Amino acid sequence: MLAYLQATGRYRILRKLDPRPIAFNLRPGFPLRGVILDTETTGLSSRKDEIIEIGAIAFTFDESGIVGDVAGIYGGLQEPSASIPAEITKLTGITDEMVAGQLIDIQALRALVDPADLIIAHNASFDRPFCEAFSPMFSDKAWACSNAEIDWSARGFEGTKLGYLVGQAGFFHESHRAVDDCFALLEVLDRASELDRATPFAELYESSQRSRARIFAENSPFDLKDHLKARGYRWSDGSEGRPKCWWIEVDEASVESELRYLRTDIYRYDADPPIRYLTAFDRFKA
Image (cartoon, rainbow, N blue to C red; front, top):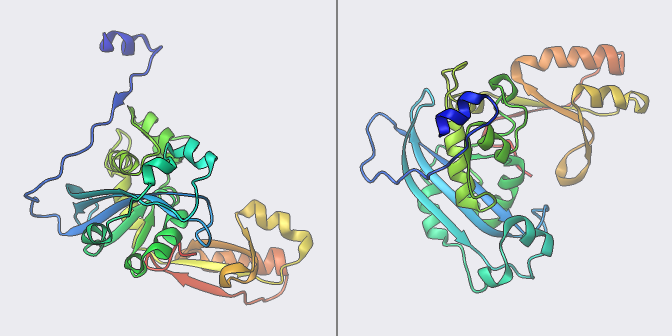
């Protein structure tokens, strides 16, 4: 029946994603450890909102980005200091009754995080600040973002939201629970396509090894803000220790060409805008 439906060209078949089992005897040849992590929170601000759920999957991989085995799983709820907003319950399915009296097991989570060479989140600029506010165990780790550091478009995907990636990869899953989303992301990251034999995770790991540069276009002319925005610059309001200006993040190899653009098209003199170089250890921080 499935073969017939697919052969008509009028139907797409989605298969339920089955979580990978924990391997109690890890295969040799995969010396590195990764952790895929997802959080559910009471809101968007890591300064005032709280984590109510953490899911984490530890796995092994090698230097070329080939995934080995699932080494451990953790999922836990935590009761926040105030009631969960209705819109968060609608989004996540997590209610006040579910988290009542619950605490995330720090030691169980640390057992996965401490050995990790790389922590992966699908929106690391969101998850990392929340995790660092929750526990210092996350602060000195290398982080990678599977949303921002993989060229999904080049791989034939038309969007980057996890649910869309999972669907286009041919699966469906119970979304918006942290561990389920972690398993879904692992499958998408470890899936090679017919066009590209290198998996998305291999691309992500390679990207995480490269240094990036954040260029701050301080004192740029106000009437050229639309030019900066069209080029990919984002506005910083000066909070969290950043300069109040437009900024962009580029590969280290692109720094000189970006400075030429600023000096020629924006400042129109030999300006020297501030540059901050970033590695996976300090990217995606608040």
